[in-house]
Length: 172
Image 1 (cartoon, helix red, strand yellow):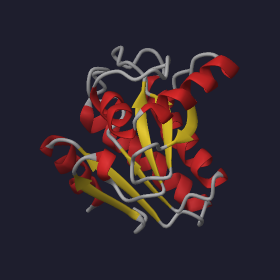
Image 2 (cartoon, helix red, strand yellow; image 1 turned 90 degrees about the vertical axis):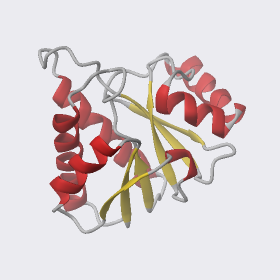
Image 3 (tube, rainbow, N blue to C red; image 1 turned 120 degrees about the vertical axis):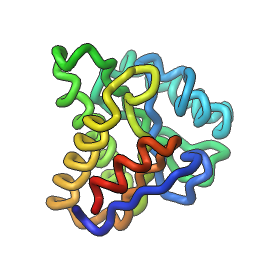
Image 4 (cartoon, helix red, strand yellow; image 1 turned 180 degrees about the vertical axis):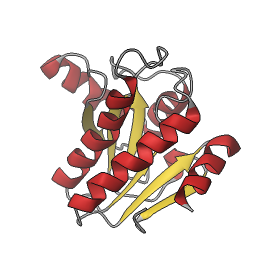
C-alpha cells in the first residue's frame, strides 16, 4: 500500500484537509449519516452549491462525483459522490464503488487538492459489506496513487471500530 494512505477513527466534518468526501445521495440535498452531518456542519453554502449543480446537470449518478464549497467546515471543498446500494453484488456495485473513489480523486487533483479525507462509502444504510467496501476503497486509491503524485495524503476517516479494524488490517 502507498505510504500516503492513512486511517483514523473520527468525525469527517472536523478534518483539517483540503477536501472531504461526502457519501451523498443522488439528489445532493443532504440526508442521513455522513451526508446529513456534512450538510449540518457545513451550513447552507454547501446546499446552495448543490442546488446549482442539480439545476445545471440534474441528479448525480451512482459512481460519479461533484465538488462544492465546504462552507463552515475546516476543509476548502466537499466532493460529493453517490455510492451504490448493495444488491447482492448483481448490479455492478463493486465497479460503481471503485468509481466513487476514482472520480473523487480526479476532481481533487483538478482542484489542486493535496490532502483528502474519505468516509466509508456505502457501508451504512446502503448496506455494502464493510470488508468488501474497504478492500475496493484501498485498491482504487492505491491504483490512483500509482499514477498520480500530486496528492500528499489520503485519510480514511472511520466512524466505527469495525471499519477502523478492517482498514488497519488491510494496511498492514
